[in-house]
Length: 328
Image (cartoon, rainbow, N blue to C red; front, side):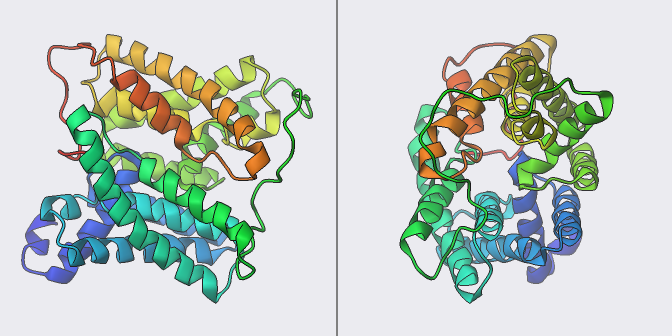
């Protein structure tokens, strides 16, 4: 594919966009991005919500064009580093806000702003040895979702309800059978792209396998560990089987298990510890954001990954280079 792209600007642009989608799960591979896009399209079709797929595509295209217009580093653009946060912003806005002409303006605006914030985040964190991860996405999505409460033209029809936080009530907790456990594992993976679909999860796993068998193993292992941990701690069953407590742990497992360190037994143990802690942080942030009526998104993944990278441990002979080869 690289050979074809060398002589075609359109092909190079499409390659960068696909890599941007792949970078959501920290992969730098256009075929992976194509399979991830297929997962988004399928899940949108299955849910009869085509606008979600269109929002993802629109956001990554606008973000890549914006990065080119701003003359950002070509290597970053070609690696998809200015597309993944925008992809998630597009998906999030289309998921939580009501459809309409203004929504598409909002998606385009969000994609443009996210590119600028992503570059700024790279600049701030690189001297400290920390990756940006999905921090720009989280910040912009939070601000834009919160702002929707102040605009009559935007309505958050799918946003969580705000409420005063009280003592936990076990609305629906019951033993998970094998089917429920498997459902939670697969949907923990698909929820990385805000999808609750088993076939989409299989497409995402296939995309990971094309790029990195190790990342596939850590993603599935992280999903299994998150479902087991949430069930052990007595989380609400519908949240577990819906994958709503597992998507951030999946990303944590991939990041610490395959991107920041070379896979090994010690690295796997360290990543498992971080993954389990991400479950706790996910629950904590879900509670913390209840009064604001906005989702925690991937903030638990970002926070825990930073906390576990700050010690700069030598878990192997040499730290593995990032799969993107840069600040990602």
